[in-house]
Amino acid sequence: MKSLTKVYGQKSLSVKAIDDIDFIVEENEYLAITGPSGSGKSSLMNIIGCLDRATSGTYKLDDISIESYKSEGLAEIRNRKIGFVFQSFNLIPRMSALHNVELPLIYANVSSEERRRRSEEALKIVGLTDRMMHKPNELSGGQKQRVAIARALVMNPAVILVDEPTGNLDSHSTEEILVLFRDLHRQGKTIIIVTHESEVAHQTDRNIVIRDGKIVEDRKIFRVEAAV
Ligand code: ADP
Ligand code: MG
Image (cartoon, rainbow, N blue to C red; front, side, top):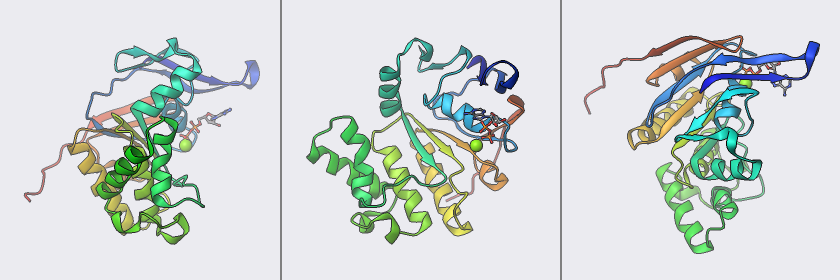
């Protein structure tokens, strides 16, 4: 991202949510974006995730300038390159876990057999093989979030974008979800988490702090890995 700016509204009512941000995320990074409420985290996530466009500046994803895409092209990039995980899970209540995970594959016109195979595989990765046919209201918070992570994984995206993933979870489920992200990172995924929980941010390898739409801190986290 170079000189990235996002302004909402017009003239005297305008709000500069992102103010001239520059940064690079390398493939296979695991990073957290933190900052107070209203600092621009979600605005930045929406741009990274191609859900919204910057007002000015450039954003390159895999060396492709996102500005040059029309909305259909953006939807396609989103479907293929990016997996989303949200605080509120965003699962469809009347559908089984399996069916929820299949949805991105349906949008991508994948055949039903292939959909089933890939969705079962994604649910296996998150440890929910025995809950595939359950509906969201029959699952715990942690299990719902794992279904959402399986859905984010099923298209095999390069980048996983996560907005407050543990905001609705107890500490045990938070721990489980963080172990899962760490594993996915080891397997090569790029993971970007927006969070206001410092324990979550400290599990990642890089913390970016934003305030009033500007990056005020960007540091690597060094840790001594426990021997397994
Ligand atoms: P955070 O996720 O860090 O809480 P946001 O990115 O949601 O911050 O918001 C950053 C600023 O932009 C805030 O001042 C917010 O009120 C404003 N904002 C966010 N979305 C919109 C919008 N759609 N229209 C107008 N202002 C917005
Ligand atoms: Mg937000």
